[in-house]
Amino acid sequence: MKKIFAAALLALGMTGAQAQTPQPADWTTLTFTANLSKPADIAWQRIGGNDWCAIAKYLDVKSCDINSGKGELGSVRTINGTVVEIVVAKTAHSYTYAQPFTPIFYHGTLAVEPVDRGHSKLVYTLIWNQTAVGDAKAQADARASRQTRFQAAVDKMAAAANAK
Image 1: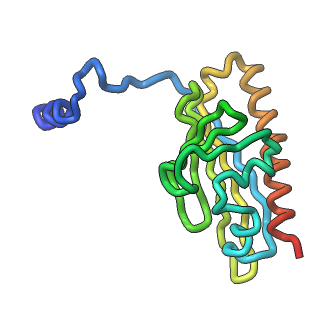
Image 2: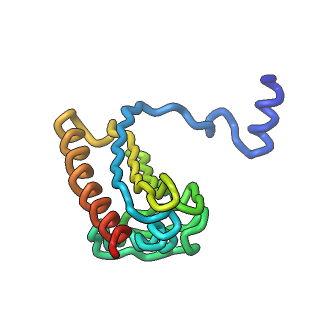
């Protein structure tokens, strides 16, 4: 088994010195939800789920620029000129993005889940390694800030989805 693993590393051009090593992690997650009075297809369309930069209007960011792709797997956007995000997973009614250049290994998933023929549920989940954020107070402040900001975004998306 060791020989197979070593051969695989060599084939990929990796040596033991290049292999990843575990970093300290203290993962935290926040999940925001809203009940929607529309089917998932309609709700996803109304919130702009297929528009890779639609989230900008809900989070009130200054800019969102698409660097590559159109929202499919591997697409890249830049928020406010500095925050790079890449699509790492995608379904008909969801996408997950990562911020690959941040020390907190931040990810977010925006999804609309069907409930029944006429209803769905909006779910926005965030996960990040809060180790690099700082002490306990800084970590609590970061969570509280995201709690306020993303709950407001989910409320705006729900209003858009539920509009008559």
